[in-house]
Length: 247
Image: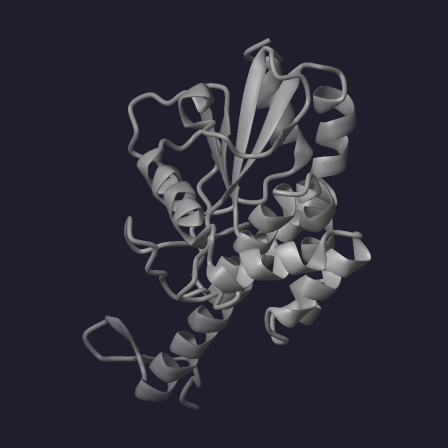
C-alpha cells in the first residue's frame, strides 16, 4: 500500500508527494505562527518606521547584537519622563508602543518587579520614550501624544498606566477615550484636548522613534540598559542580569 507521507522510488531516493508538500507547508506555516506569539516583540522594516508582517515579530535575545558597535543609554535620555533617582548608577530607557501587546506584556509581567527592586531602590533611572509602529498600530501615534500631553500637567505615569490597562478598548475606539482618561485623572480638559487635537507633540514622538532606530532598535519593546541593548518583552531576569553586571 502506498504510504500517505512519502513515496519510495525504484532509484532508492525518497521524495515527497504533491499532497504531502501541501500538508507540510501548512504545518510549517502554523508552527511559525505559534512561535511568533511567544517571541516577545514587533519588528520594523526600516528606520522610517515601516513595519514588517506582525505575525513574524523580531525579538533577538539580549546577547544578540543589533548592529550598533557600542551604545550608552545616557546618550539617548533627551527630556522624556522618568522615574527613579536622577543620579542613579544605571540609566534604563524603554522605547515603547502603547498599542503593542508585547509592550503591555512587559508592563504587566516585568515592570513592577523592576520598579520595586531597582528603580525605587535608587539603582536605576527609568526613562520612557515613544516608538510607535504606526503602519501596524494605527492608534499608537495619538496614544503617544496623549502621554506627552498628560506629562504637561505632571500626570504622564498615571496616563501611561491607564493607556496600557485599556489597550484592548481604545485600540478601536478613537482618541476620545484619551480625553476621557484625562478627565478621570482630573487634568485640565481644555488644555489636554487642545494639546491632543493640535498635534503639539507629533514631532517629539517622531524624534523618539528616530532615536530608537538610531540606537539600534528594530522592534518594540526595545530597551537600553546602561550600555546593553535588550529587545522584546523579556522576563525580569534578563533585565536583572543586565543591571547587576553594571553595578
